[in-house]
Length: 366
Image (spheres, one colour):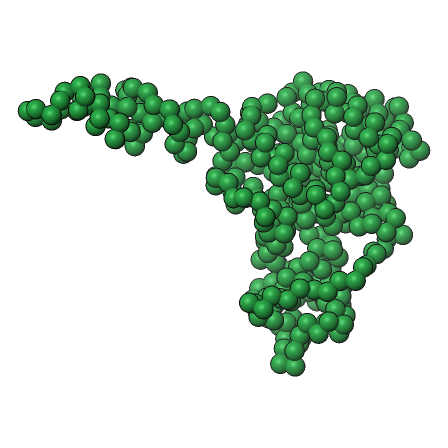
C-alpha cells in the first residue's frame, strides 16, 4: 500500500524573497513528491499554510495560484481542465534539485571535462612546443616567442621574429561522455514507510541539469526499470512514480547497452540506483519472478550482462540505497564481474556520491 511518513517540518522562509518566491520553492518540492500531481501539491501547500502561516492577509494561496498561471508555471489547457505544470516549471524543478544537491560543491570548468591528454581544446595548458605548420595563430605563446626572438637575434638593428622563434601553448584535450542513469521503480522503493523514489528523482534531475548547463556536449539517457525497462525523457522526471513491480535488472541493463551502442562517444558508463536485488526476468512473453532470496537463474543472467558491459568497456556504478548483508553480496559479485564501482549510500548522501563518481570518470578514458 502506497503511503508517506511525515515528520515535523517547518518550511524555511527567506526574508530576502517575496511571498511568491518562498511559496514557489515549497510548491516545487511538493510537486516532486506527488509525482507531478498539482492538485495534491496545492492541497498540501494549503495545509502547510494553515499550520505555519506561509501567506499573509494581502497575499493568499489563491493569489499564488493566479501568479503561477500568469508567470507560466501552470496551465489549465488539459482536456479535463486540470492544472498541469509547464516546461518552465519542469526546468525550475531541475534547477532547484541542482541547487539542493550540488549547490555546496565547488564550481568546475564549464563545458567539457579535463583529461590528461593534450590536443585540440579550449583549456590552455602549461606545455610548450615549437611552432608547426598548420597551428592556429591563437595558440602562439606571445611572451615566450618574443623572448626567443630577443635571445636568438639580439636588440641591434631591425627587430626579427622568425618561424623558429615561435612557441605554441598546448591546449588540453577534453573528453565527451555518454551516461545512462537507471532508476529502480519497483514497489520496494516506497516500502516500510520510507520514500526512496523522491530522492532518486531529485538526483536524476540534478544530474540532468548539471550536464545540460555545464557539460552540454555530454549525453544523458534515463531509464526506469521494474518488471520491464523503458526510457523516459528528462522532462518526465517530476512525474515519475513507483509501481507494483518486481526488479528486472536484466531488462534495464539490456536497454542501457542498446542506448550506449548508438552513441559515438568513446567514454560510456551506466549509473544504477536501486534498493534491492534482481527479482524478475522475462523469458519469452512470460515473467519469471522470485522475491525470496537471490535466485540463481536471475543472478546468472544479470552477471552475464555485467561481463558483457566489461567487455565493451562500459563500467557500471551501482548506488545501493539499502544495507542488507545478502544484498551487499550481490552487489559485490556484480561489481567484481563488471570491474565497476559500488556505493552503499544513504538517501542523504546519494547526490554527492553520484557527482563525485561522474566527475572522476570524466578524467580518465575507459
